[in-house]
Length: 321
Image (cartoon, rainbow, N blue to C red; front, top):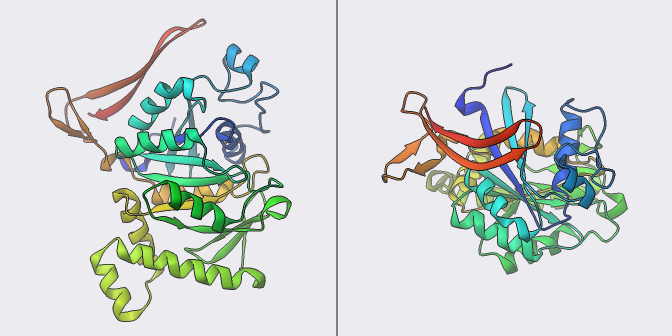
């Protein structure tokens, strides 16, 4: 088994209103990573996350599932949480032990009550957030401007797209990465030049991204005022800092069921998601703990279950040591 050091780990909670597609997204990620040979289906009881008999019967997630995925030299530990607010305790515990929250929003329904509740958990626990617009291939999927506008009306935050979708509804075929200014199309994310019909929209969205990135750092802002532009490396730096400090919320687009835009998200996360080294926990004695291998062992137990086959299972995050 490959051993990953702390800086190569990413602990990420997937949260959303019920039925938005968290489990479907994990199925697409597992397929793309070669962990499975086909996508499972919650309706058929074949998904990896919803393996419990009661989850299969109800066709929904009742508990948080741990989904580890390797991406290059990184290990992404996804926590696929339930969507129904009856199980919000599971969601809050998952957010607490994660270093990043992916808030999934249905591209056809927009922000729903569960979205607002789970956003409040991340805000309370000061965990960085990325908004993932899902189901962009649905016939009733909204235009990105409308979705961003709704987010800004409901949440007190600055939402900054890192991508723009290529089409919406049945015409959704991929995304345009505004950091590298390339198109990523199909299930494998084939990279190509930006189609001419999207060039103007991409250039406009990139300017907004650069401005938001610059405003997250005084040095970058000064350079932007002086030169009117930033290098790709500087844009990355600003986005990463803004995400970590909560001054900007990145937005990406995909369809989990069609497996479009998923590879782009997985490729993005190792670069942008905070590592455990950036997280601080307060112990019962008031001491602040960080991810230090040489420190005393400290664990945070966030879940205990009774499995009918293996007995009692305790899930914990290693905080230090």
